Image (tube, rainbow, N blue to C red; front, side, top):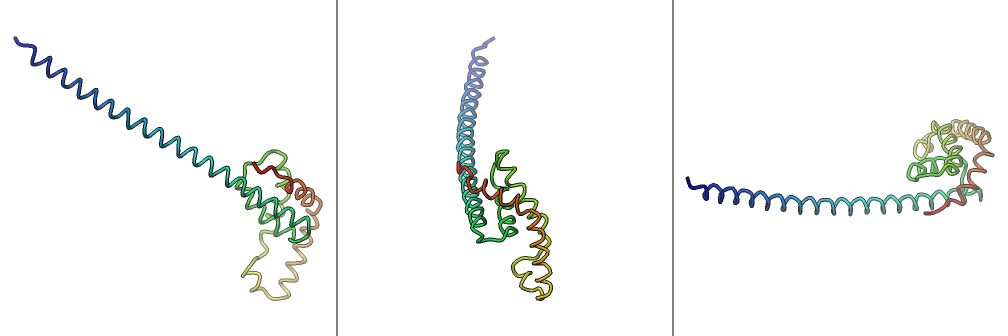
Length: 153
């Protein structure tokens, strides 16, 4: 019996499988590089968004301290932006009062819905908003002081 044909066929099959395995290894390596690059890009994007949101929160907190915004408007804006940052315990504490005020006043219409209201309804809701703001006032002021000093990175 001549086994040389079988040996040659076996060597060809092993060589072909080895080449295919090397090809798959190169594809896997390229895929890992792409994944690492995407993860790095996403991390940079999250960091940029975090810094932008923190900067916006600082601006809003400072505007509130200068009485350029109502407490409710600041609370709504800060509550939205707080979802975009990874906050520390101290920041969470400062944000808490804004989140609570935003939730307590969420039923009050804004923008076009506000302008569509009758004058008497606007007065009633303004009085209600001011009452709610008064309940949270000292917490909001304290939180605004803390948030005005947020770390940016």
